[in-house]
Amino acid sequence: MDAFTTGILQRIHSTEYDLRLARESGDDFLAEVEQAELDDLRRLAAEHGVEVLPKIA
View 1 (spheres, one colour):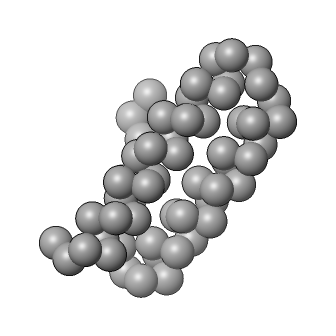
View 2 (tube, helix red, strand yellow):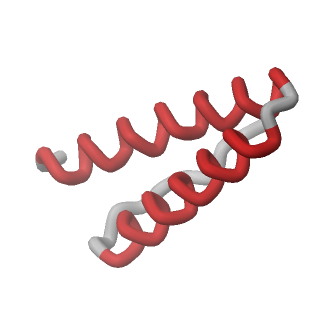
């Protein structure tokens, strides 16, 4: 795994965690910001052929 792949997957994982915390705390604005960041990261990963497995609830 190259540095880009490792980095993007780490950022996705971190953002998923932050999104969960925002939702759990009821911070709707922060949840929207984190969701937008996650969407951008997933799009960037897809554009570079990095497979991101769906999160299991």
